[in-house]
Amino acid sequence: MSLFGFISDVIIGFISSYGLLGVLILMILESALLPFPSEVIMPFSGFVAYNKNEGIYGLLLYSTAGVIGNLIGACISYLIGMLVKREVLDKYLKYLFIKRSHLDKAEHWFKKNGYLAVFLGRMMPAIRTVISLPAGIFKLNIPAFLILTIIGSFPWNFGLAYMGYLLGEKWSVILDYSPYIDVVIVIAVVLFLLNFFEILTTKKLAKIIPIHK
Image 1 (cartoon, rainbow, N blue to C red):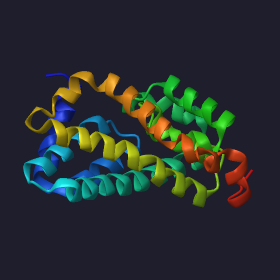
Image 2 (cartoon, rainbow, N blue to C red):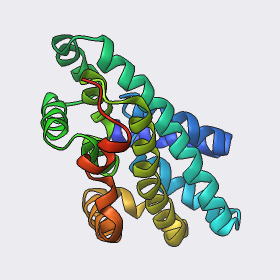
Image 3 (cartoon, helix red, strand yellow):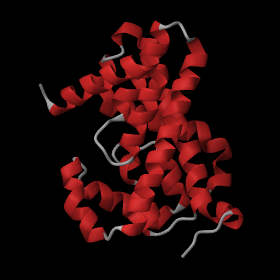
């Protein structure tokens, strides 16, 4: 069995046993830099909602549990970024199956886009896992970080859970096409948000919640 297959089995078993609490814990681990992919956690939670006939109510509950987990895990990663030197991160992230290039990309994107990077980074494969590190390294204003983490995490989590719900017993097909589905989710969310996206630009949001330098 591959490592990804093993992790998937662990995730499925954990959610089957602990339900909402399982989703919460696993999403904390995912956002705290451990290799528990939301691409498995959230679709399976959607399947659980389907299997229990919980409908939109169940999807909202599991998605919310995922967002709370993301928020807690992101705070852990933010703290790590704020306290740990970059060279130490480079040395040890590889043991968590996180490529240095992912952190480099997240950091470059953060320097260029600031608040926007945190918001959209929550919906980007690989980047979503590490975007909290540069936010901590550059000490992004904490209220802004928390708000953007919440509103950026929900569309991603709900979209994946909804796919798992729609697919029902065939939810695991997502695992075979997850790289393509990731792209579709990102495009769909960005298009949906374009109408009111201006209020989240760095300059306008900075007037409300400034970045600490």
